[in-house]
Image (tube, rainbow, N blue to C red; front, side, top):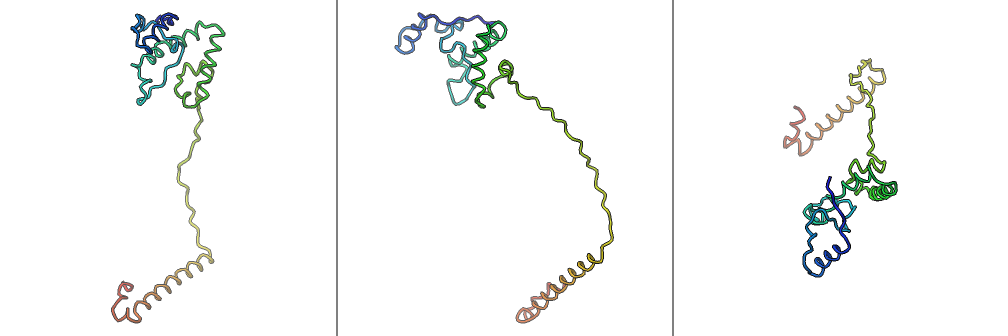
Length: 180
């Protein structure tokens, strides 16, 4: 387990003077064991290729990655009730938003008592056997309807032949397709 410590007020002033005023680089600036006050106890941002502040090489992101797991584990195992309550409030606040909730890992979700639901729905058995068809004799009504339909089709065909062979179409020989 990595040991780290927050920066002191004097180190913070030196760091701010270096960053914003162009002052000399403080000795603790590259020390991985000294964590900035702004990054202490904060969850790392989810990686986004288009946002340089989420790159692991970013100083703030690197400090957050190094400390978040240590702080979470320490709070879960050895934290006082007040520390656990504060951590739960922070994680519940993050879990309210569905986008940030998707970035919470299983340990964090279990800590705030919202594990992802495990759904075990039993699948019903489906019988795929073919349904037997029942061959039935057509009723007299069905026979009459079929005869009427066939008669209508035959009348329609004869009407088309008549139209093809009469007038100018008959002289030009346009009705030969219908006799085939």
